[in-house]
Amino acid sequence: LVQLRDKYGFEIAYTENVKPENAEQVMREYVDAGFDIVYAHGFEYADPIYKVAKEYPKTYFIQTNGSADDLPNLYTITFSAGEGGYFMGRLACQITKSGKVAYVAGTEFPILSHHIKMSRQACKDLGREDVQIIESYVGAWDDPAKAKELAKAAIEQGVDVLILEADIGDVGTVEAAKEAAAAGKYVRVISWVRDKNYLAPDLVIGGWEERVP
Image: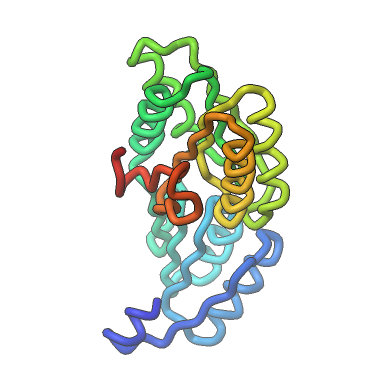
């Protein structure tokens, strides 16, 4: 957004931490204020943005992790579904010693579910069908305390590889891993999308598209 403003002269605005139930109102306010493009980041905004896009056919709308394709003014973008999950599954199955891997994620949504499915497929392709890939959902994308709680529970169940998929919550997952490592346990963390190695250089590998150990 800042680049659009500074390099191309766009007028920009943004609202953080918008709950799905409030998204329609926020988007309508931007349209009514004269903005030509409204962008909603997250699968949780699929229904609200579709409804508002139908109401404002002359405004362009963009959504991350959506799948709608029948509105000419609504564009949906996402990662190549499954590719990242396959890569991370392959990596996780190579470095796990216990045979237990856990995704600590914000909320469940179809594209993430497909990535997890492909992680399991990667383990199968490596001949590691013994590896369990566990799913844990925080219920939000900004709750480090809950993410840490889930990560600690996973480690207590024998998980030694954690996959970060909870945005701000990832800080809590890494804290749990650091505490376990300090107690003498083998544990590794794979960061989804963004390189978060700085949180624990000895433990965190990531992001998957930037680093290969």
